[in-house]
Image (cartoon, rainbow, N blue to C red; front, side, top):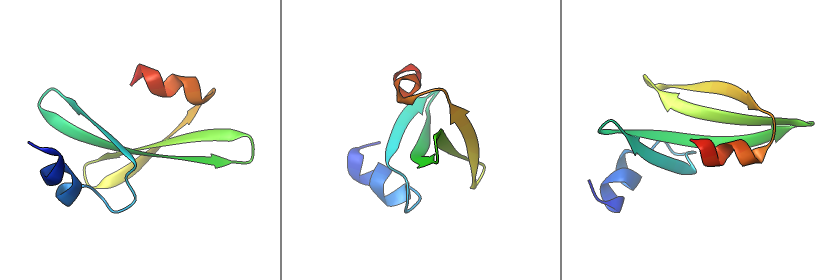
Length: 60
């Protein structure tokens, strides 16, 4: 899969992606108050996770 295929298939608000086990996973982030939020797109829905800080993004 090339970058154009990934962009075409990505949900409109996705900012990041990675391939894991042959599957492309999309992400977006937000900050609500002091909470760092990571949204992961799976099964046609966004799943929310609260992060301690943005450095946790490097562990994806």
